[in-house]
Length: 344
Image 1 (cartoon, rainbow, N blue to C red):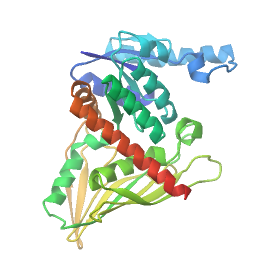
Image 2 (image 1 turned 120 degrees about the vertical axis):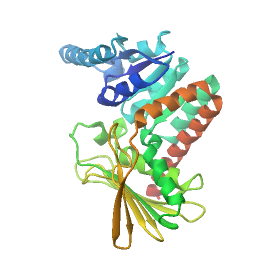
Image 3 (image 1 turned 120 degrees about the horizontal axis):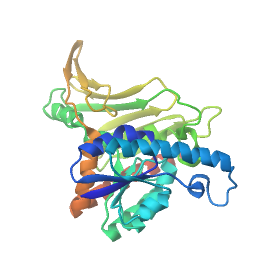
């Protein structure tokens, strides 16, 4: 049984991770941690005791919901306490992206397997550091782009391979959502905010899945808006060695879109919940041949549970672990490639 602890009682940890974990075999929820004052505010920062006391109270109340939901586990009074505990085998990290590297590195140094929300880090060098550390200790490092495990992706691939729309001429992947609250970490540069790191990472991950290992980013652009210090929307083109192209568009101040369009020589497939289909949701796709349209159902799935199962496979099997290292490095390398292009 793998005893897993959660760093921070975040919304995604409670709403998505915990229900999936309860369905997973060979995992036991062992506890959840809240940040102490230094971990929350930083080293040497003067803190108002009343404000900090209220923060800790609120965080503990959130953490208590996890304990009640699982009827097990304990609350740790700091991230470090949980990470260093001999009662913990693995750690789930749902923090803002800029904090992933620090806590994932500490967890690996303490011999813990790491399940980290996407992206693993905000830089290629940090990602490579984590991979090298995990490899040297024989530990799993798993990046939670959970959509990639959903059965609808393979179902669409099978339709294309069966020749239903002829030869693929173009993939178009679009992911964007309306403006969120101003204090959302996505709009905070210091926390790893920005449309590329958030929504853009999904589109790059899916394009890499579709185009294969030879895919490269050939054009890239980021757009900024007044009042924000992070990129708010962007676009890119990826092409593989066979000349197959994917056009990407993403944003954090947009009409909601979460679409794949596969334009072929004999028809076009579209599906509009390709990256975010929740448990119990039945996705659909529409196939168009000239002016004739048909809509069909795609499989339901629990992509978060399947991501947790992949994490377990990484823990148990060296070959699976090495494959995951390569996938994490590939995604980080493409994000780095995107950023370098925009700086030219």
